[in-house]
Amino acid sequence: MQNWVYFALGSAFFAGLTAIFGKIGVSGINSNLATLLRTMVVLIFSGGIVWAGGEWLNPAKIPGKTLTFLVLSALATGASWLCYYRALQLGPASKVAPVDKLGVLFAMLFAFIFLGEKADRKTVSGGLLILAGALVIALK
Image (tube, rainbow, N blue to C red; front, side):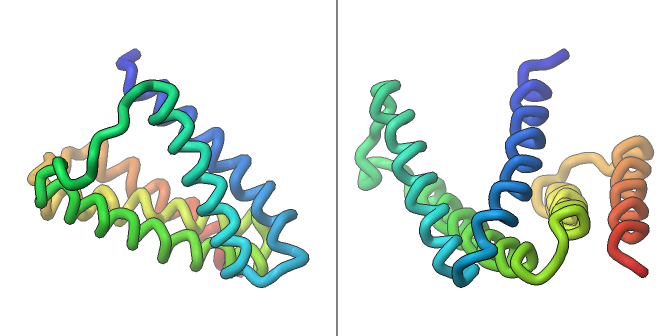
């Protein structure tokens, strides 16, 4: 297996834990405050990893295009987290998490359109199966 697969599986595993921990954690407070607290922990955690690895780089030295797209990515992440925590507050984690994973379909579509990645039969079929699964879970 290629190395990226292990990291992608790790991401999926931790995303699963995120849904459960988030559902429990958001039950007693406003979802926006929960998102802020979560973001602060992510900042401290990732900052610690960068510091320990000696990977810090002055943001002023990062190319403008790179910085612009990182900021856009951060804004998209923030919007996603705000929506996700509100959805967890309002609905069951067993339904919210699979619907949230429809982001996979958006990522695939955007990759085909904006990054020129190939929409082969296997990839499109897998995406349609993800869509079907989310619909089965979300619809009554």
